[in-house]
Image (cartoon, rainbow, N blue to C red; front, side, top):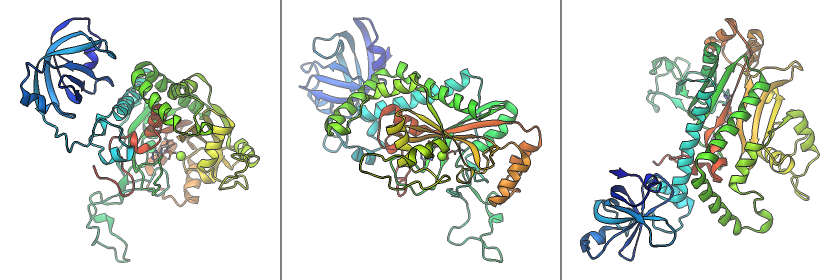
Length: 476
Ligand code: 4AD
Ligand code: MG
């Protein structure tokens, strides 16, 4: 029978015959293969009898080679592992030339591995990160499924700008250099495939709202695209977003949902991905040792995750946050680069980080933002100047979630759109939701890669998605 490494590590001994496929991580002393098949962080030691094995085959057992092994699972004589495979026969399925195979058994920089994104999951760090990513994705679907939500597939190509931020990738089959023109010189999109301007979606929210207003509790989990030119360690041009949307739920309910949901999925990986988490935690501890004592993190990776799972998120209004920030300095000498002079200013990431990392030292839900710095669809408060928006800020990450209670009143929404110059005709179907059986409803968007960053302790968003898309980079 063919086993995976993770299955073999759980078997009673001795066991034979067994078969296994995998890739050679190292081959020592013409005898000991460390074999990995991706099923677990652990390699299994396979002991080759070099006297019984063809010399030509022994030469082809190199780092990166794919092999098929038949043998027996026995107690290990060596240190560091309980079991090993006594190899009876080995077949080389795919050679890997030792001189030019990029992933050598040594430490490679993340920059180097990014250039080899197609091979980087052959390292312990990236295989652990991607197993965690997969587990988080499963935990997310499980949470919603367990809690009565329906999964909705919202379109990737859309005709609307959900966020009104104008950071969209245009989709068009017109000749880019020589497009058909209208009389006034503007591009004639009537001749385009869809007969109008279209773009890759920045968010599935508006469509999710339509489904919430009939199915009640829904969520989307899909790729979203933003052409914002921010070359930071927290932005991607293509990222995955989870967007629940719930009818008859107000902003307070939205906060409760977001908090319970995030705790649940993080708890899932604490319970199911211990090995990978412990490996990543050790990697971070080693990295910390190279820093000056003052810059070292106070908590280990697993403790940070546990802290989030076990403690309440702090809920703070925008207005309270501004009061705190006005009186604060990030440290004794330094001032913020961007000083908040008055109520109404948008918070910069330095302010968000100050609030979560220095002031509250826990995840913070900021709510009731000034209307003029938030999207058109947010529910206006009775004060006429704030909206029922919420952002969830995480230590080490900054903004993890953005959400709101939605404006459910047709006339108020129309007025808002008019003020922002949003064409009613473009969103006629969205307005219909307010015309026919409108109701209070709310939802939020969680940036999946930012969650993976938090759960893995990785510092750059490019290292938590298989093939990152960033400005000037779509190589794979
Ligand atoms: O705050 P945002 O823009 O909110 C929305 O799109 C709403 N329509 C969501 C909703 O209410 N249904 O984005 C939501 C989250 C952010 O908090 C952040 O975590 C992530 O998406 N995000 C990005 N992640 C990676 N790269 C980018 N360029 C991102 N932009 C936003
Ligand atoms: Mg946001």
